[in-house]
Image (tube, rainbow, N blue to C red; front, side, top):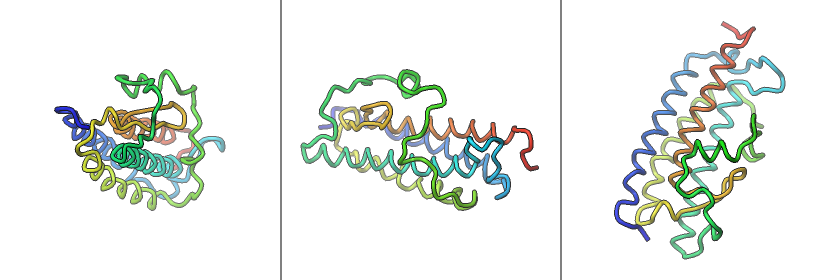
Length: 186
């Protein structure tokens, strides 16, 4: 199952995602509920909706990898096809597979609403899930733990972990855009 140092980069990927979460939290902690609910455009997400989306997407990502690892242990891989993105960075995969202004998969679309304070705590609650994932991968080659992303197709465990970091930073940039929008409450 695991080949040599296949797990060696997993701690770094977890650290990178943890740092991205810290950057996001540094951006949103000082904001009020009014600021969190602000929408410059009714068709765009508020800051709270961005964070809700991040909570849902990260939980889904970690769950997918964990389930794929368990399936591989049972010799019933979650993905049996060609790993079309083998060896690619998450940035390359997203560039190749996402449309401009890509819409979120239905499962990660904000629905509950709620105040930014709630979603700020919820995104922090994802950290223990992220930190537990390496143990779920122990003894496996992360490059063989493959499960499909709803938009991009099959990703391995490393790509999923890189996605958590990428996605937190991507929405951090979107949140900064909301904060720069005309009419943003001060």
